[in-house]
Length: 462
Image 1 (cartoon, rainbow, N blue to C red):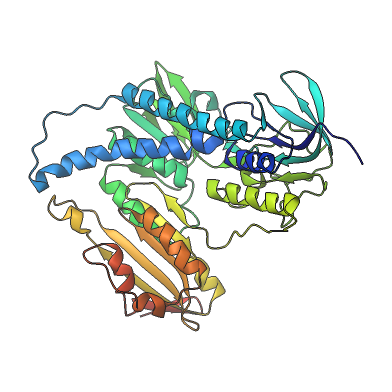
Image 2 (image 1 turned 180 degrees about the horizontal axis):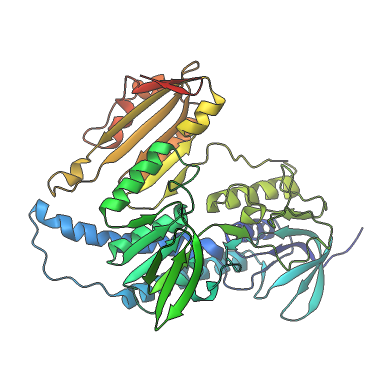
């Protein structure tokens, strides 16, 4: 029987890699986890967590503005960007410490270095140049922002990695892209007082989401002052006296203190030596895996954004847990990527689970669509003109709920709970016989008794 330095060597100290390393070590396996930057990965260090903290900070501008409607007199207020960055950094450091503690308490070895695969059972640690062996190797290196190296002047732009630590709040910000990352930052900075322009090559934002959700968010963001340049792309970026000048493909030139490139992400698999070790990669760098997250090299597995399946932190953790069940618990378990709840922490917020109308219409011949657009109670006294959208997509033949989409306050929280219902196979009749909780916005989900319209063979009726 072959002898190895480690039972499991994990490359990547993000949520998926740390979970796999911690659980394997807890089972008595000898484990090493190598991370070149900071333990916690994209989500904790430069993604979901700091972004949500900035979302909370930016929401206070709305709360202060609405306070008078509820009888509050608010004095002069001032936003301190450096103070927010400092508070955010302290929380991120605390969370990183918890990730390290979890590995340490389970006796997993942490290696603060880049590592690369040199063979089916061997890894080289860049910091020391040492090559070690492992019975199994897990790739959990995540993804990274597309640097757009082909764009003239890309060096004058920033990505989501740098935007959290800007030395000062920009007066103007140009965002390239209209996916959830781009729009979340557009909303954050717009609410903090920055003039924001979003540039996107397509005709509408949030490609892949339900059409009504896309239109609802677009309209709401425009009302809050965010400018959109659709059907346009960056042609070049230049820096003149501290100001970025962005030339667009539609002939316009716009200016800003900062330019954020948020036009997609790429699997972070370059320079890992995977192909030389026999691991197949797709053209964009994603690791090819089977239904058990195993590559075509039997000893090498991959989870999370490096595989570009469903690029969400809970999914990476789920894949890691399935890996542990499969490899170390004699319980082959395939990750379940169906009906994953998703939130976009834009303002207003989006929560969604299941199919949008357009995708559902391609897969089901008869749909019943239940839709309501209304002003939430919390905005009535302040007189805020912001609407909420709730939409339920139902299979007209089986009555199964195929998708639920919400735009408005606490949409993400509702989507998480709705995910349970849809995962259990809820029908519209189940929704209808659920008692409403009044007064809440969520009660609208169980009081939409009549369809707004139907879709038959892809065509709307009614």
